[in-house]
Image (cartoon, rainbow, N blue to C red; front, side):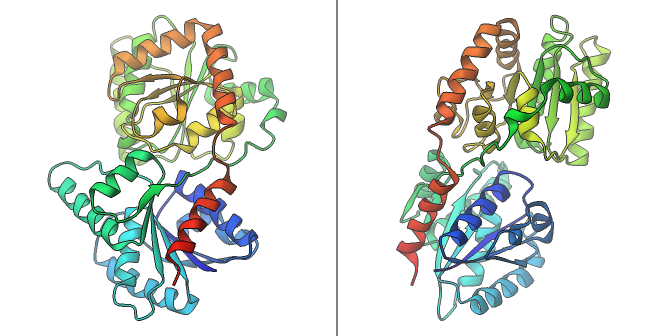
Length: 376
């Protein structure tokens, strides 16, 4: 089968999922092409995989005049590739793909994967819903990476929508990490104590991740747990990072400085998981976050917000609190910091639950089943 995968800008889960999906499809004998921004290619190196080809297509993060050129180029790429199926990931890539496929004489099957929910307000919310409705009704299949996204697609008119997992990649050789050496290196790099609890958050510094809640919770426990350090690993929007830094300084002026360290984009997440004591996720919404799956595979105690697909992913293998509730998040932190036995028990449960997580092969199988249904 000839399969084209389209995605927009990504620095995390979507790009990771697409890279693994392309590799697995190509390994099974399919002809696979990946289309997306050059920045995303530089991050994930899609065509480093055997039998996977890449073509650049600049899809901006917002609708604009550049979409006209993107639609025309994608239409040419689809035709020249002679695709049986086009699989778009995310609303922006799906919208451009829908426009490119409309009116084609030999239209390939169209599969749209949804990795995020609608989070706008006011006029933006209405525009987002209109775009999602057009995609739901225009795609031959909608695949949601969490059950709430499947329900959303059906509500918006998708004729066929179902769950399809995005699986976390294997941890590799994290067990060989010299934890003491890494902790010492981090201590020198960040000027933090070599001893004491280490918290890890992974995800881009953006409003959806709601680091305000995490920062406020850390400030609330700072007096009782001054040695607790929190690392945030992920690419940073400059304005959002500046706003959060100002929030930290405001707490500091009130005598409760939260120990937060922005690490930027990192390639050593398995090692950071290995050396940390608690994994924290304060997002307003997540599907089935790959970073959570990685923490579970590492056997880490988890504190996360109960939103999207997180409850069905974590189950009883972590502490879940309401979104936007810094007080509840602080209470969860206190529990985990003050009870080593609870941390160990939740870490054990997380590792056991991780054994049941879908693999990259499972994710590729689910996608290919959809391709078979829609290919023409």
